[in-house]
Amino acid sequence: MISCGEASGDLYAGALADALRRREPGCRLIGFGGPRLERAGASLTGDYRGLAVTGLTEALRVLPRSYAMYRRLVAQARDVRPDVLVAIDFPDFNFRLASAMRRLGVPVVYYISPQLWAWRQGRIHAMKRFAARVLVIFPFEVEIYERAGIPVEFVGHPLVDLIPPSPPRGAFLGSLGLSPTAPTVALLPGSRPNEVAATAATLGDAARLLAERVPGVQFVVARAPHLSDALFAPLAGAGIPLAITADRTDDVLENADVVVTASGTATVQTALHGKPMVIVYRLSPVTYRLGRRFVRVNTFGMANLVAGRTIVPELIQDGFTPDRVAAETARFLTDETYAAATRAALAEVKARLGAPGASERAADAVLRVAQGRNNTVRA
Image (cartoon, rainbow, N blue to C red; front, side):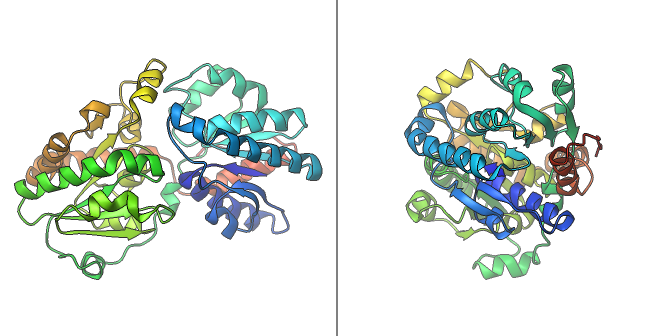
């Protein structure tokens, strides 16, 4: 059984499922996920779309549907008795599910572990109760789980293997009606509806300001395919050279000069492409005030966290303004020394994310737990 609750988790789940089936062609995959997991051969009990939100107050609105999904998965586990549950990130849902699986005697592997080092660190005690093994994708996470006495493996980051080849810049930008030679800024407003709703208008205003400061600049928006057109109206109507394309994030990143991205998995994706970025994020005021008290880090973007220092600017909550976004982006476009130093730092981040083969190493670890073996392999 595999459980993932958002687009990035579905991406990793699909790659893991492919690796599991290569090793055990007859294995049966069931659970909660999305189209990528389903395409990899899993029989889905439920689809995550509509349940993926960020923030405390936002989560309350989907709580009834989340609880119904939880009950369906537990009932299915009672019926089919899976050999292992793989919980992928999505902690508010998966912690509850993992605890129920443990009570049923189903061993739990937590893959893409939640950011316990950043906030709500007390959750590590719950992890210790239910996790047979934790598979982490960032090297600095190993020590946290080892200190707590939780079996842990660093398998590397699956995105290292999931970056596909991109078309040449001229062909890609030309297909969108844009110039292959003009300065190009990628806009990644998020993959969840509430993220895009919170970022799109500010990004549209920032793009207009940037167009006034950098002659000829153009924009490409990487859009998650399941989101409604209405969410992107503030960008589509910005009155600047701009194209919106769905489900081609890697092509957008590879052919951009600078990226403005919502905080999250996309920052790792951008780092793997070696592109200077400006990280932005905004939550509802209530969620931010409540959550900020539990945060234990001074930086949010994964590129900065993996680097161990601030290598790209972060504009969070009240700091996320059109003027600041435009100013930080313009600096990357006009100061080549600054941009080159940032690209060098991002190359170091990429090197720290592990060797290729993360999904294969994760699949091996999952099968060892399912078969009652516990050998550890390091990336």
